[in-house]
Amino acid sequence: MPPAFHDRHARLVWLRTREIARRLRADSALVEAGRTHLERFAAPDPLQARAAVAWRAVLALSATPIADLLVEDGPRGEFLRDTRPIFAALDGPTMARLLEGKERQGCAG
Image 1: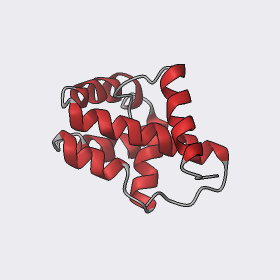
Image 2: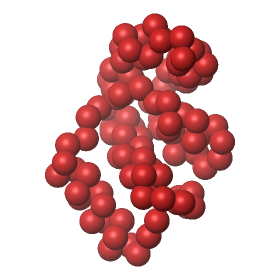
Image 3: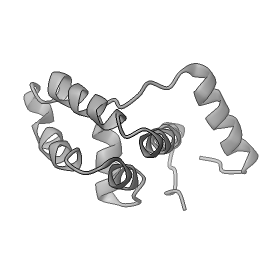
């Protein structure tokens, strides 16, 4: 069950994250893309030090546990969603499809 959404942004983050988790399960090579992004952009930034440490530990796992952690409901899942490295880009048509599916399910937020 998805977490409760307090605003549209939180719902969009959830939809993007679910799609990224789906893609990670389908293509474990995306884990390396996440590692590359983390080390290139997040790790050098002192403001992202806590996230970089957490994500290094997560990225030592295989793709399926990473995907499970991303969609975990709770403070840890929320932290990982908020700080996740880029595994794959989602284009406009993909986001429109995700939003359309969510609206059809009657999930507002």
